[in-house]
Length: 462
Ligand SMILES: Cc1cc2nc3c(=O)[nH]c(=O)nc-3n(C[C@H](O)[C@H](O)[C@H](O)COP(=O)(O)OP(=O)(O)OC[C@H]3O[C@@H](n4cnc5c(N)ncnc54)[C@H](O)[C@@H]3O)c2cc1C
Image (tube, protein in one colour):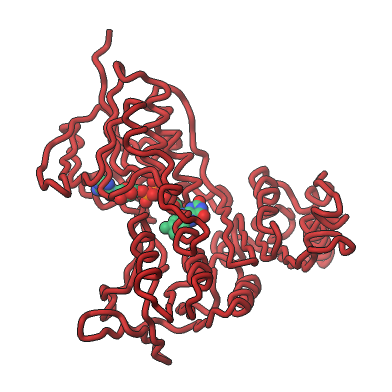
C-alpha cells in the first residue's frame, strides 16, 4: 500500500476549506492527512454576510460560520486557528508556520500544498488612515470590530470611503443602524463596474435612502483627536466629521507569500494556475481571491475577488488532489449587490471594458416594471444590454431595479456564457405569470431593442 500523503492548506476560508473538504470526500484519513492553517480567529466563515451582521439583519456571529474547527476535526481535517504561514519552501516541500498565540514556529511538510490566502484590502497611505475608528472590511474579525463600534461607541456620523459593492452594502448597514452616512469616492459615480448611466441610478438610490454622496473627491487624509481617534475625513473640497470610517477601496490578491517562494504570479498580481488550479510549481495548488483567472469574453487575465469563484476553485483543487478531474473554466464577471430596496447586477463587459478589449459595441437601456401593471407591488427596473456591432453577440448586461430584479442577471449570464446574439435572445422561452413579470419580460424587451439597434447599424452600412 502507498504511503499516506499530507495535504497542507494555507488559509481557512472559502477556497481553502472547500479544497480540504473535497479532498477528504475523495480520500480517507489513512490515505491523506489534511492540515489547514488559518491566522485569524475564525475559519470557514461568510465574509459576504459581514454587512448584514453589522446592519443587524444577522443577529448571531455564529450564523456566519459554516463549520467549526471541531466539525472539521470530526471529518478528519486538522484546522489550526491563529496559525500563520510565513514561508514556503517548494524545493523542500514544507511551509514554515508560526503560532500567533504561543509564538512558536515549526516547519510543516506537504505532499500537496493549497495556497488560499485570499485578498488584501487596499488601505490608503494617507495621514490618519490607521487611526482608531477607521475600519477595513475583509475578514470576520473586521465585521465584529465594526459592529462593536456601532453598538458600544454610539457613533452618530459615519463616512464610507469607496463606492464599490462593499462600500454600498456597508452604507446600507450603517443607515439601518440609524447613523448619518456619507460616502466619498474619487470617481464620478458609485459602482464603477457599471456604465455611468447605470451608476447614476445607483447614486439616485443611495441619495433616496439618505446617504450623502461626495463623488469625484479624492480623500486627502483623516483628522484625529489627541488620543488618536478619527474625527473627520478630509477631501480636497471639504471636511466631513466622522465618528466611524469604513474603507471599501477594493482588494488585491494576497499572493506575496507565494511570490516570495518563486511561485509565478501574473499581471494582475494573482497567482497563475491552470484550469485545474495547479500553479506552475510542482505539488502546489492555489484557489480563491489570491489567484488570477481568465475573463471568457475579453480573454484577459483578471483577479475578481468573489466568494462564488473561491468556492468553485477550491472544490476543483480538492478534486484534483483527491485523484479526480475537474476544471475551472474562467469567469464572465457576474455580480449582484443591493442598497436597501434597490438591487444592482452586472455580467460580462461594461462599455469601457468592451472598448478596451477591442470590441465596437451598441448599447440599449430599457426601463420597465417587475410585474404586470395590474398586480400591486411591482417596481421599476432598468435593463441595459451591450452587444457587439455586426455579429450582435451579447457582450455584457447590467440591471438596476427593485423586487428581485437583480437575479434576472443569471439568465443573461447564461446567454452570454453560451455566446448568444441579442437576436437569438428575443425568442427565449422565459417564464411569465402576472406576479413575476410583465408579458414581455424586461430581458426580452431589452434583447429586442438591442437586436433592432444591431439591424439598423448593419443597414446604415458604416
Ligand atoms: C464585506 C464583504 C462582502 C462580500 N460579499 C460577497 C458577495 O455578496 N458575493 C460574493 O461572491 N463574494 C463576496 N465577498 C467576497 C468573498 O467573501 C471572497 O471572495 C471570499 O471570501 C474569498 O475566499 P478566499 O478563501 O479566497 O479568501 P478569504 O475569504 O479572504 O480567506 C483567506 C483566509 O486566509 C487567511 N490567511 C491569509 N494569509 C495567511 C497566512 N499567511 N497564513 C494563514 N492564514 C492566512 C486569512 O486570514 C483568511 O481567513 C465579500 C467580501 C467582503 C469582505
